[in-house]
Length: 440
Image (cartoon, rainbow, N blue to C red; front, side, top):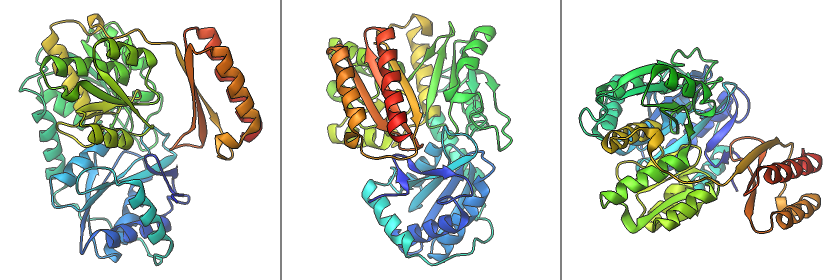
């Protein structure tokens, strides 16, 4: 049973278990031993001040386990995934807590195939870690070749769109003080865009702070002020992207996946006429796809689960409402920079303003997060179960309720959809309060 790994790797408070140096060194050791003889393992990180400590600890463990660590530098998580599958690296580790505040950090592990390692492998690593020897973190990883590896990733990104695909497009990029702060402006300029960058001066402590994919309001205002065609906000490790259109309206992953799927279908490339999203995607999105003759399949939350379902059903496009979007024709994980470049090309080819592109009518949806002190099975909570039954009766089949524990934070997420805003708010707050009383 996994205890350290959640839906997206290991996450927690920096410098504390399980992200303390001793545990990270053991993890590096366990990974090197588990993979193969003398494996090369790539390590990249976002801009958090705690990243170097974790990197050095992992490096020491990898070396002690007979592996060869190579530090790539500050790079988006999908960059590590890409470099894994296009090099002799046996695995890769991205040191990041994604959208979490700077006090947190984490690790995401990729195999040589560029895919996040499966749950079963994570369980094996945890078993190995428990019996791994104590290791003293040593010196920095090998850094030779890091610049070339980052350049290789940048070249890949620009190769996924036509030369000068964004010529004539004015774009605002919100780097969120994270891993995209240098690479994103560079690849957009190579693609021919007129680029305006904001929140691109990380100091180790400001990652995601009132910026990026979690706080796109400032981006939306800047897009309008600059007369830009669109804007993109990235999260800390740039595997997700949230957009703002030319009128300053914020557009989430559901809308981008919808427009992308329409583009693929027109080009005869939407394999099986299906897309994959998660249980969080809006029901209005599903209804519109059905009217368009496109099937929507739902996975559990987590982009690696989206990818697993895509592989099972041979879908080429999928993702999450939060902005993780997987283009399986060229990638094995969500990549915010690739998503932004491709969407820019789609917009250029449409010869229309972003705000004029038709999508779907979303059903009112409310998500409330409630911090919890424990995570018992929801079905074991009698007060919550009674409240849930009452709430479903009140909805009367005109919406849905999804309650789940976060895989990356100590919170329970309450999502309610329905055709009446006041009703869904009442239900969501009621369920939140019951959960707070029972397990908060």
